[in-house]
Length: 484
Ligand SMILES: Nc1ncnc2c1ncn2[C@@H]1O[C@H](COP(=O)(O)OP(=O)(O)O)[C@@H](O)[C@H]1O
Ligand SMILES: O=P(O)(O)OC[C@H](O)CO
Image 1 (cartoon, rainbow, N blue to C red):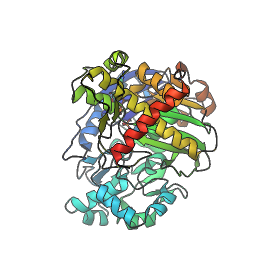
Image 2: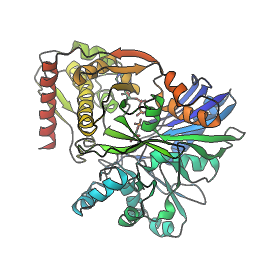
Image 3: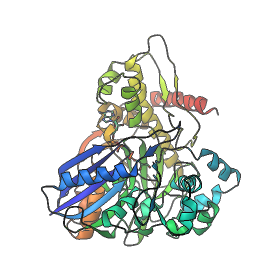
């Protein structure tokens, strides 16, 4: 009995086959091209993404009989395609893309934020799908007229992949829908008023299902397999980390960092510029989360490797950070594509503070790893201020969570325990569990939560006064960068 999880991320696509005990058996991975047509613009070729899915799925599943498929994906990224041919009209506009910053300012100036936040739980920012979709409708020749004639379909990546896999099912799940800025998380339906405000024809939008549901059947493996689980990757990681109790928090360190705090069946509105989002929806019952989204986490390590050439491999940052001069207090604010929560400054760009003649690769590497810890503290402070319950567990995952140095600094600067699980592919695991549970192949929530296993706990070692002093340096650096 095997389950296939497709994890379609920002920089690569992975397909992982799990057995019924949710142990990973085979993995196939394929990177794809990032397109940066202008400063602040980020695109993917959706056809290339589909090709990476075909390749990885057939490779990973070659020696297995797959009984159910789960899909998890980079969220917010927008695809607009032709309903007849399934061909995208334009490159996908990626979540990191800032091209709609001006239009978002107009929405702010027009006094629309309160209504949009009340309906969607989000803030007005180019990050979310809605303004990117509007851009495509306005800028791609003929797109709006064709959309109005019902010839086109919009979807986030999950929806596009399901269409391709099934040959035309137009569906998504509640966690992906709630990142579009078009979905009402209270009424659990597309918001007609926001669609009208942004001039988005509602015929473009997919049907929204629970996370564990019948999304369609695919013949990609030469036999019929049902797609039974779908979730946006950060929500899938929340599920994969078994954060099922209010107060449980996970933080994923991939390209960006996304922290989600389970707040239970009641939505918790943020007064500190966090997002209210759907953690999961099972049997029609919604569990909400507060989310803090940081755009640059592991990407800062990629910058050290690809732009500065200081390292050849991400893991080298550990040894470099250990060698860094303790007397140099270098602070890096990695606002390469603006700042996300809780600052939300799309136009800010990065800065470094405290440079001396003696500053070298080791200090750069340490400042890069520390920047991720500091940004996480920004998020957790905002969460503590918003959430009256106690956030008692922090579970980490994602590529950068492999760095012991970064995770120790995180525990130190938070003054809190940080738990790293045995299975770090939590995103794929979450999607596999949703599909396996729906198929009746694996146990329910309780069983799954029991199977979560600790690999290492990082306890804080830094003195409180030192922690506060360092965090004050960071806060000063961010304020100087943003100009407030
Ligand atoms: N040992 C390490 N130390 C620090 N950063 C790392 C390490 N290993 C991987 N990373 C970072 O983790 C990121 C990849 O994580 P992953 O979860 O695969 O990301 P994504 O799903 O966003 O593509 C990269 O940005 C990489 O720089
Ligand atoms: O693909 P990742 O892991 O970088 O995650 C991207 C997020 O879903 C964006 O919101």
